[in-house]
Figure 1 (spheres, rainbow, N blue to C red):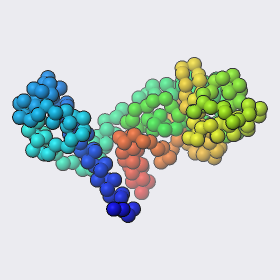
Figure 2 (spheres, rainbow, N blue to C red):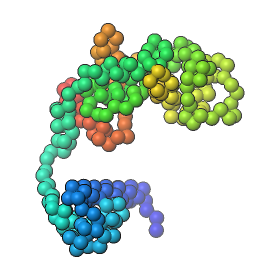
Figure 3 (cartoon, helix red, strand yellow):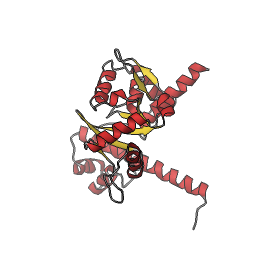
Figure 4 (cartoon, helix red, strand yellow):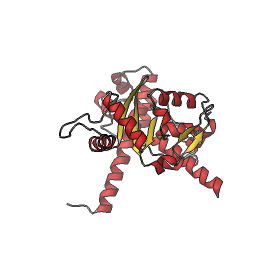
Amino acid sequence: MELDGSRLDAARLDAARLDAARLDAARLVKEARHAARQTQASLAGRAGVARGTIAAIETGTRSPSWEMLTALLAAAGVQMRIDLEPLDEDVRRQVVEHRHDPDLPGRVWIAVEGIEDLADLNLRVEGLAAAALLGAPVTVGDPQIAVAHTEQSMEWLADKLGRDRIRLRPPSWLGHAWPRTPQEVFDLIEAECPDGWIMVRGYFGETPVRFAPAEDVARHVLVENGERPIPVQPLHEIETTDRNAARVLRLLREQAQDARD
């Protein structure tokens, strides 16, 4: 039997919801059992089910009925309480409770300055680091840096590559001649790094860097950082695969739009 596009999308969505429900049930049961300091066998005995049932639920291979879930939680000495709240209220609380870290701009700029001569280029901070610098309550990893594709940045790139300060992803030179000019270096990186990102070694480890059109890098918001403000990616351009961070960004964009209206 074949499904048309709309039915297939609906089937995928239903499967995703089922997977999420299984994972939520697995987390609830496992956390309740650990809090009660019970083994799977002891919880199963108290709930009157087989130990294999507990194992299947906790690994997400089995989705329990509502009755079984409440019975398992009761056997662990807890019960569920379900409250209704406005959509995204939990994210709004995160935003309200968030206190911007005053030391964050300095830490981000230290990472930039940790790469030789990078701070002298036309650049902007992107990704979740940019979101955090703009006040979003998100976890910040290594800052991602976009550098304008200019003659100066290509010369910088050629110098770093020549001194083995750059790691390509994937690091393969097969099928390519050794680059001799800055443009050949950039062409090589475009061929070797489909996602556009390279890892540049600095004093504090490796930092992801990409080269972008100068007009893209010119679109930025300045965040105060002592004598040298940090240019960061505008909020509406930031993308992430992190589900919670994506909800935070969506809410902040909606709030900004409401403020403009």
